[in-house]
Length: 359
Ligand code: AMP
Ligand code: MG
Image (cartoon, rainbow, N blue to C red; front, side, top):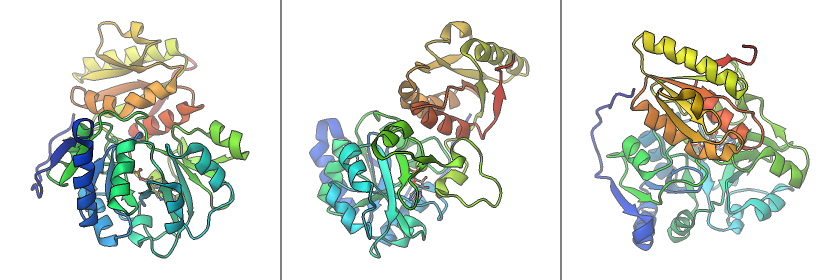
């Protein structure tokens, strides 16, 4: 369970509803961005914490508010495709097709950067990550600001990414002036990050899957670090991969195996934990919830539709963290959107996995 930390509030954080007052929210947000301040805003993936993407000093405030390591680069968000020309020094050959097919949407493309992109955004890399979001409020904010908006997820560094304005307020209340509330995010996991420098390589999986990208541009590599911890001394293709991520304060264990095997093992672990006086909770699915009757559990979605699990994962981790000190989660097949799910879940668990498939 998470302890609240004491911080000195620097701002009275205002929350403006994008449903009732989109115009007012984006006008005020754009003014803040132009003044070099931070704004949290909804996207279809997770909430972003944005600053003027051409102003290094403004971008530095993002790292301070999140407690983010300085060597973890951000994504530039744009409102129209042609704006990539402001950010990339050249457009890689597969980029146009990918942009025409998947933008606006949850796909981030990495390509060589222009000089005007501040080093705070790229953490000193020669490449910059760019995305055109699908969320209309996000695009209205960027268009009104008149500059690309550099943004990572709007959580305190290391915590699960925020999928509601309340999550952002819980993490960053008092640290930022404005949150635009666009309701719950559609996908619930961060964008797919695809590098187009050299062989196309997925650095982070998301709702635009390897299968969808390969159908368009041919074979794509998937970075080794997606389902494995990075080894000491290994250089991260995507620096974000090397950090402890998405972690609730509770211990998280992932249990692999067929649904029945996994559920049996989870119930044994649950009994053991409770006998030790711990409070356990199970991250369950529609297919397995009947195994957990009488035990604390939360149904995240359907094992055969991993996008439903993705949509609920981060909010479920935050919710269970308020009740439990041990979270027992079923692993699923790492295919299609299951790859994004397992990538986030394994990191939340610090790669603590129990394989029940031979039980
Ligand atoms: P977040 O969405 O909060 O995870 O932050 C942006 C993610 O994009 C991080 O995981 C970064 O590692 C990744 N990223 C941003 N820029 C680059 C880049 N130039 N090359 C590779 N990965 C990047
Ligand atoms: Mg993040």
